[in-house]
Length: 506
Image (cartoon, rainbow, N blue to C red; front, side):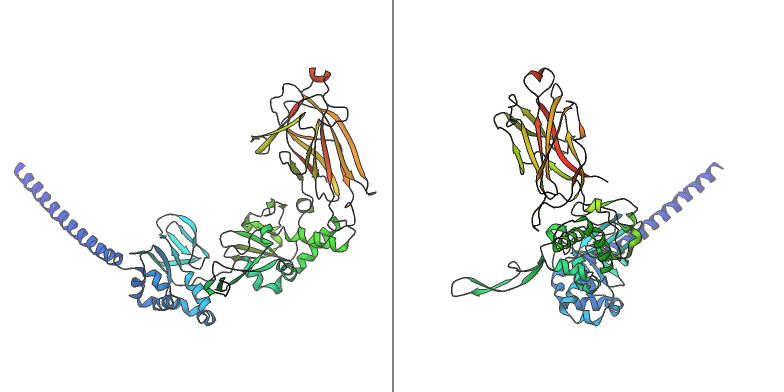
């Protein structure tokens, strides 16, 4: 029995080894075939691989026609999302027959650098036409510009090739879309277009010689820019992402009727100009998902807190640098757009006057607990003079609108050993056009105070100072150290202050 069992065991081992060697041989053959295919592709560039497949002959034809074939034959690293022949049957002939539009279209499928599907991510890929297209890879599914990949991660000597069965349309950016749809937004575009400027583009112009004065002569290219973009953000930039409110004339009229009542100015044109400026400077936002407009405020690119009701959005148009929310009515709260807090950071030396430079000192230091910028350490070095000429600083708030305001000061501790005592002069102009000075205080401010203190009562500004359109309503605040020599036993002449702010009331 023992010998028989040994014979069986030995026979089993022999059969196991035969199967193992056979499997290894089969596996080696499979890997050899795989690597032979991979090696052959890695020896060819992207253009060669596409040229060998008749399914992509139309794409190759357009690569040659637009000149991109020369780049895809070079040794750079590229990624190409190649549409098959059938995909081009859906492209309008007007695009295919226009050299500029065709180059834009083909360039919308080629990028520098290698992008594969190995990692779960969502990236915006910059294409040869300077547009950005979203490349999504999640849980094994991959799409490019919303189109699923037919074949992916085909390696070549100069990058990666993916194939798709649809052509990715070239989306305009927000500014391009608005200019293509002026009839939909007449008043909006009339306002924005007044800031258009045409300028000589020296960088893209070709020097073709010199004139008799020795000055260079160019085959000139001119570009159109819009100076209003410096205020609201560049709607023509492909490098930034915005959400813009496409304001129809109905929406414009509804919001204008609300806003113009807040500008009580003697000149009708001034009311219109100020109202339009307020409306059109608060239509642009860093890109936001409409699903996230759930009743919370969003901050415009000009810093206003705006509540945008998602139920008022009749269309969300996705574009190459963001999206446009089309609205036929708007319900901005004027308190967030017109009547915003007017803040003066005390470290700002503009529009600030200080008493005697010998007796009064303002030093600034970084303090993240204050405004996350600077806290000012203010010290009176000598006894206050009877005329208060050495113990104050005065700041100016400009362009204060007709409203009621609270006056707040943000204090912060700076190591004073005792409390301090301050008084204030708040000056503004009433309806008789004469300056009014309100005396406030004195008040005691704790040396440990680290927060906002309201100074005085509510202040009402009834209308603009004069009938001049360019005149602004100036408001001044003088902060005075009110600690005499004998009071040094009770108070310090040193305190910390961050900012002063006028805050609109209900």
